[in-house]
Image (cartoon, rainbow, N blue to C red; front, side, top):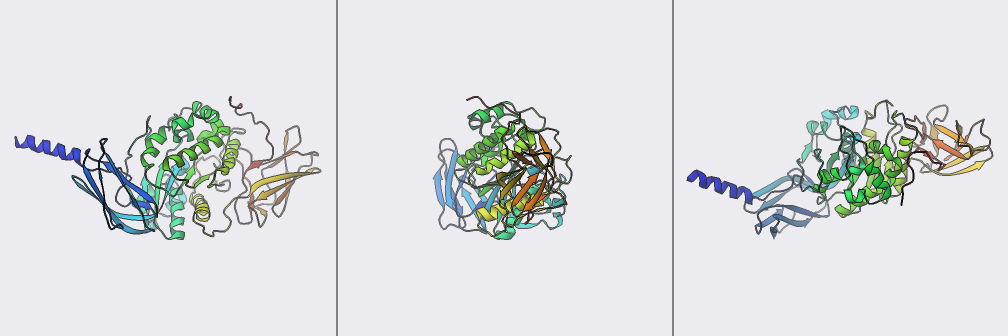
Length: 467
């Protein structure tokens, strides 16, 4: 009889225990100077009291009939460590909490890659990786048909072991922020190799527009990632949307070459949807996909073009990686430090108001035909352009017949003069407009020029969507 009573009491206690989502755990970083929510589950009508060590008074609430409770606090300026204590029928204590800047690192394999997965410059960091002011939360891969309420995982301090299995791009990004801002940095790795952007967008949004619906309905099947719209949002993003973040860095696009023209609208849909569920207009900085010998004619170039166009999203920015590839037959460039640093420079300049020098790649602005030559002008090249080599590579020029010829060029400040001996009446120029370009045109500060084309000719990829 005593055993039965003990089991009943144990079951009752277990049912009544206050519990928290995994993203709320010891060692976490909370976003500074913002309203944060502490939430979880308990018995209906159970009184839950939450104390934060930076606050003088605890906050109490009564658990709702759906077994969910939540309270909110205002976080102070960056600092710590702090503790949070939750008292109900049981007691939960979260320790070693820091307050600082929290960034979400998302995308596919080039964001997911780690030191253990072959990132060479990340391997070189292992012996010196320990930094108690950088914390990691890695979300395991999980797809779901409906939005989930929790993910597995826990926050950990950056050291040689945890950094070895964390996003290398995310680590380098966070390291530069921490070194520059001197505040704690929390990094959430939410990536899945081979994933489609469509799967990260809530399904109703992915199916809302003609272009995004077309992309979602034509995602090819692959053994390494799901190909249904919304399922990664449901399984990995939805559970953490109540956890405030400072912003998002994104490295994805290789998988969406199946419908490159739709990628522009899809990026807008992703950012709008995520900003909506997080209820904040956070910055979104992303990586243009790197050169790789896919073997296609224009899908990859058109994907990069869509990524460039997506910089019209407010509070967004794109870094270029055409100079960061050591093997054009490897879809995963082995070095990620410069990728993380370039992303960090965007964040430091645009989000935190730091002076980092020039951080934007030169971007095509306009063209002017002058006889048999075309003059191209660029934004974000205030000190002019340089070519790292005797001749400028990856330039093509065409007449109205749309037949492109290899072009020559001359740099004049931030202007490029382009011509070819066999082209007498040029109308269009293209630069690095193919799957695996090896361009050598940079700003004087060393940032590669964004691939571009001056024409709007049909590339023969996807027919215009039906209204």
